[in-house]
Length: 216
Image (cartoon, rainbow, N blue to C red; front, side):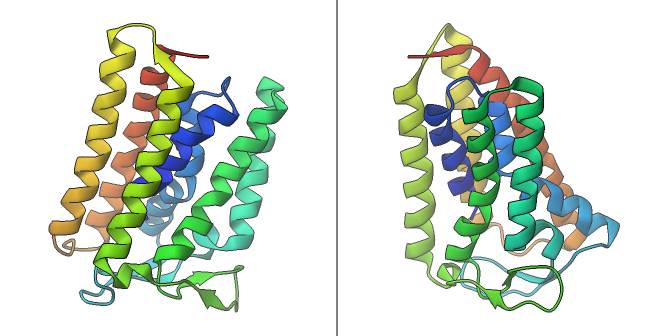
């Protein structure tokens, strides 16, 4: 899943209004922000296999540190715990931790059975909705659209930056997702990893847009 994770981040703002959207995006996307680093370091592995699913050519052969269920729980506890230690905002800490963990469950819906439950010799699971174009598109649009709608209901712009930076972010994410549907397989795993690292730029963008909005 791609933009669906951002929908979770948008929606989470309503549950934790004092937590920055930038941090919520970081949390909901954390494992996909970590994964390209591990891929470039050779710790986790991927093969480009066109046709392995209808909508994604990626064969995730080894990624238990970033994408196993157990490590999702661990990362959620770590990031939520750090946030609580810094901000002393218990609700925000829980929401941040659950946003990290939500990534695994949304991926479970779309991935073929390649998601490990824990590092090591673990069963691999996944419902495989990537094998259906209509199901993939419906799910992504539903999560993203619902999350953005919830965020818009929970916040309002302080100024034009709060208005246009948010819509610019939403448009950038949506256009980026659509482009991946028609771009074809990436030329290699390193190119894919570097493209994944570019998503780090979305975190400060979300923080900036959210800073110019108010809750209530």
